[in-house]
Amino acid sequence: MSQEAEVLILGGGVIGTACAYYLSDRGVAVTVLDKGAIGHGCSYGNAGWIVPCHAMPLPLPGALRQALRWVLRPDSPLYIKPRWSWEMARWLIRFLSCANERHLRYAAPPLVGLAQESLRLTEQFIAKHGPGDMGFHKRGLICACQSRTGLDAARHEMSVAQSLGITGRELGVDALRELEPAVAGQVVGGIYYPNEAHVEPLKFVEALARQAAQRGARFLPQTEVYRFECSDRRIEAVHTTRGRFVGNQILLATGSWTPLLARQLRLRVPIQAGKGYALIVEPFPPVPRIPMLLLEKRLAVTPREGSVRLAGTMELAGLNETITPRRVEAIVRGAREFLKLPENFEIRETWRGLRPCTPDGIPMVGRVESWDNLLLAAGHAMLGLTLSMGTGQLLADLCTARKPAVDPTPFRPSRFR
Ligand SMILES: Cc1cc2nc3c(=O)[nH]c(=O)nc-3n(C[C@H](O)[C@H](O)[C@H](O)COP(=O)(O)OP(=O)(O)OC[C@H]3O[C@@H](n4cnc5c(N)ncnc54)[C@H](O)[C@@H]3O)c2cc1C
Image 1 (cartoon, rainbow, N blue to C red):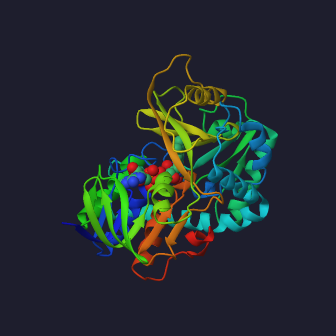
Image 2 (image 1 turned 120 degrees about the vertical axis):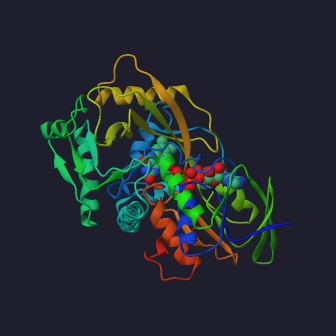
């Protein structure tokens, strides 16, 4: 016997779960299938930032110059594992062709717009259901710079963000240290964006799942999708390790694993996994209070209740989840240049996750034209949490034929053929 749902969501990360929340809130019967535990993919241990100011496309102007300096050094913020893959080569060519000012001006408005909507929806969610244990704080985000070149790049990004309605201001060294005494190393200044937020990422997914479940959504962990049953332009059923499921509409929200399933449906989904690491370390005085981006090291520092999270690095090495000790050490070394980390300190948890990265830095959200009942919500790269609520709402708008709250055009999956 098959189990039926109006919308079958494949993937229970922050994206699939936000979609489940908004769909079930509109009375749609939803089932979410995940090969692991809900929220334990890339959404588990990320830096927890919900930051419209940072909602810029991954390929930024100057990426080529920077990539050439970094790519083959295994301890640099960006590492591309040498391997032959036609998909990877095509992805890189498209990525580099987007690393310019024109693309930034095209991609930033929809990304920042979706991020602002997401932050508004997150606050609305908290107002409606309470803050629970998700650790939501709106203390802003500091971008701390070690070099003049870094500060110039940060200023440029701030001017783009400001033109889109984000509040940000430059800080000199003294003002930066006064605002966040945890910045102990050599810095030349920074930027402060006061209206940005952070949460505990897993708790956030769990809160969304709880509310969706209260509205009738079913969550089935340990249920891996491995085959589709199709007729002409429809997906009739989905075969999983726990049986056959039928859905009126199917939503692929499987993050970095999306190309594997999409291939079976003859779809080109140019998503590469960008591995990142996060370390939960014991608190050290002065304990950081405001989340910080340590710009040159591309490191995120997030204060937590009783600990600190250090996250960063981007490793393009395919769907490979091995932990490279050298990259973990690079995070600690990078953090030491900015913060007063004690000589010996306890790393309580080491985690890695695979960011689903599209080459143009814009997620793929919308209907898939070649199928009558397939939708896609994947490819959120460094911004999955930041864009999650807006994505969930947009997807629900598209599924229920409501006028979308944001323009879906820049996100349409059909832009990659
Ligand atoms: C170090 C690091 C720091 C980050 N910091 C931030 C941050 O501060 N803010 C921010 O906005 N973003 C951040 N990100 C990015 C963010 O974590 C991702 O964009 C986001 O988690 C992607 O969500 P997702 O739901 O698309 O993917 P996932 O969370 O990976 O979910 C996909 C799910 O699909 C399931 N799945 C895959 N294949 C199948 C299958 N065949 N059958 C069933 N289920 C399947 C997986 O088990 C998984 O649970 C960070 C990422 C990293 C690595």
